[in-house]
Length: 148
Image 1: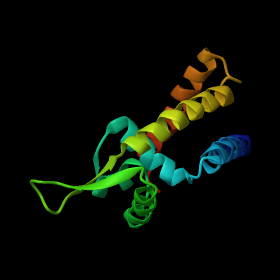
Image 2: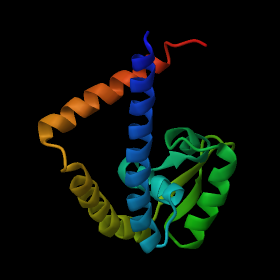
Image 3: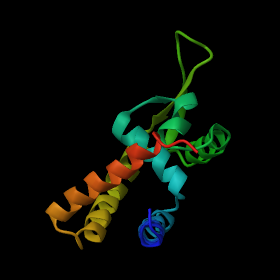
């Protein structure tokens, strides 16, 4: 590994980080305009697309610490977007379930989000997008094999 190899890896990291920051900032702005933070959107999006979820598993599915989930669920419940539903067969399990109001809200917001992401990504051709997906997956999957 040469000095140039090291510089190239650092440059790639910086470019990836800046691209992610730019995408996140603009998508987060859309959420804020609709009264949500990114975590609240992630929870609603999960329930909207996957249906009822055990509270204990939501954090893992949206990559959030479990302690923060209760706060987010409380906020979304107060807004009428979801309900807590007890599991009839196991009292230790509580589900989060999107309400009709939450469905309607996400039915309006998600297509805007999807269109917005498409506009952001359309700077790349479909072939370039596919190549980017392949390359980024390659990076992500290889990291678990590294040991320091």
